[in-house]
Image (cartoon, each protein chain N blue to C red):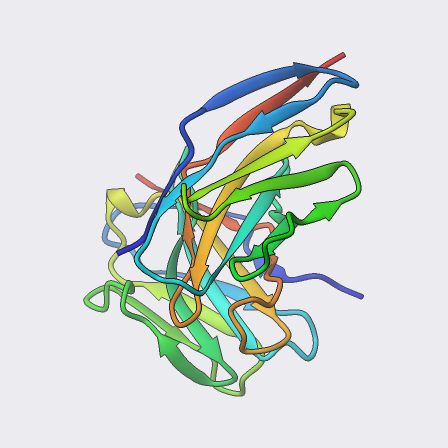
Length: 115
Length: 113
């Protein structure tokens, strides 16, 4: 069974440019998470989807960040415009059910560097 | 708001020995779940072990076990017979029954041959 797929793995952009990250969860997983992980810190939830509905986006900086999961499968996270402080690893995870006890399966992450 | 504290930024252990990673949390919730995740240098995070707060029995998964002290709000991870492949960053995470997960800042564990 394929795991959570994320692309690109690495991205270098200049500040004020837009950037997009893509995530394909494990097949059949209804819940999808986007996390931000700064160097030396634990992941912080940005947004959680149950199918195509964003059920928790309270930590998503909506002035520059947006996300979508139109068909309830793969998802895209966008930043426009990027700032220097956005340099981090962006992790995607998925779980099979909607219970918060469900095991989250993480992707390899996208490492973003904003110059 | 919930907080999770991992007071040991770095630890090391000799291969085949036992090591304990500490985690404390702060919450007013009574029902919640606790997790330990492992993030090897390749950066793909995987679940090591989980504990439901209403269960008194400590969870065990092969060489990994927890010491869950609900009153003290402590959730430590014990790794027995450490192996080189256990070298990774370990994150403690807290999830309330109706809310999002909060992760600690991690403990980097190095297993030395």
